[in-house]
Length: 229
Image 1 (cartoon, rainbow, N blue to C red):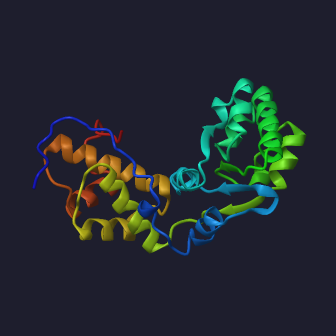
Image 2: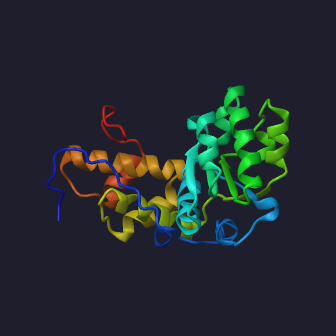
């Protein structure tokens, strides 16, 4: 059935464990997130944009009663309350230019571990590349056990594309996903961009998402005024 709506709807991301597809590219990370304990009670999870870091952080928080906070949103007055439960701090490298935020994270790191809770930290690159100017924090980060989400294999890329479509309440045929997997740049970030653009073009042209439309989008054979959201 063709889509009837003529306006964009925000995608609602599903973040439950049942919504996360496990493949060889992420199996080790999933196993570590599911583990009852980590060395030193802390873990660094790295991976490119769209690889599932936030999804796994939400799975972990739901199963442990943990809390999730962006490193950029940390405030010193929040630390005592946050340290009373397991904590996931997302996008730690984003505060590399803010020494006060780094001091706050360093305080949280020490307090949450002193309280006997686990600490999960995420970033796109391996922790040795985070280059946090606060040496004490950088050393603590590098001392954490580290697990990476690898680039997607075919099975994972298929699942990621399918989930991105479902998040937007779209249901293209399997031939669309098969074509995208074979021809698109194999990056999670690209998958999100392509699905967003397909959604937008289909909406603007009032048509279904087909293999032919996927060919046009990948070949950039669409109106230059049409962009993904």
